[in-house]
Length: 191
Image (cartoon, rainbow, N blue to C red):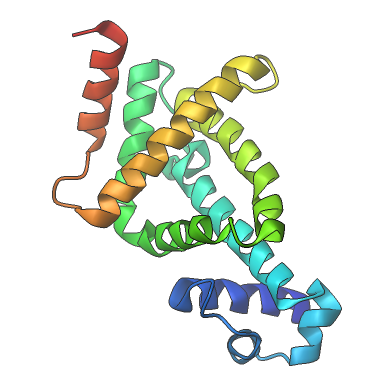
């Protein structure tokens, strides 16, 4: 890897270990084995590097959580309830490993009122993530039905955020894939 990749990898490690607000340029340099000047050369600023590292971490989590996370490359079920259940099993099973990313996401959300550049940097990836969730969680192709994918993605993202917070606060009572699927059935079928 070159300095640019080393910096990104080091910044990702620092974000997971120290958080967004406590990561310094010196921390990144120490974690990456590079030098301070290389941050400016490759990314323009520490903040721009941290934004890229944050986006990379959330994209990696999304890849693991959605259809790209299907174990062994198996095809996800076509029945919407079964697919929903299978994907949520994967998300819930990875809750412990996902905690550092979820903690980081929570911190970033608390910073966006005071950091307009950060807010702007995450807007488009958030929109893309919603479409990816619609496709991965529910099997809705954004190319074939963009509006259906958009609204389904909004719902998936809201649900994922709520589930994430519940798992962070109290894993003992947080919802399982069975709970979420049963809740979806009640919501959809009124039973």
